[in-house]
Length: 72
Image (cartoon, rainbow, N blue to C red; front, side, top):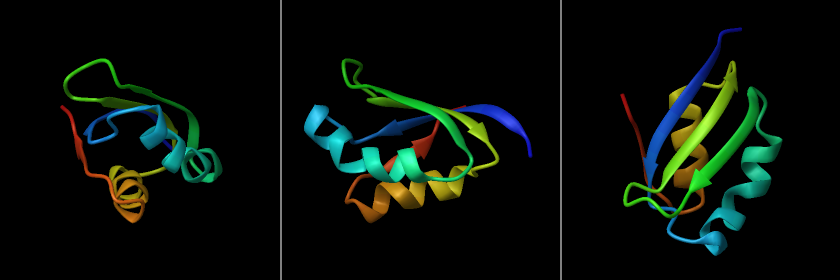
């Protein structure tokens, strides 16, 4: 499995939003660590991946009602 850092622009505006996705991201196989910076305009989600794909991360957020787009 490939280890890499992934960054996403999200609609996770506050700690309440982050708490809605926390259990899913914590339980997702292939995520070593993750964090959301809600103080930036892009609400950046950073993930240290151990095999999870960009699409899988986006699908997790969408399932909870949030949007995410991979940042280059």
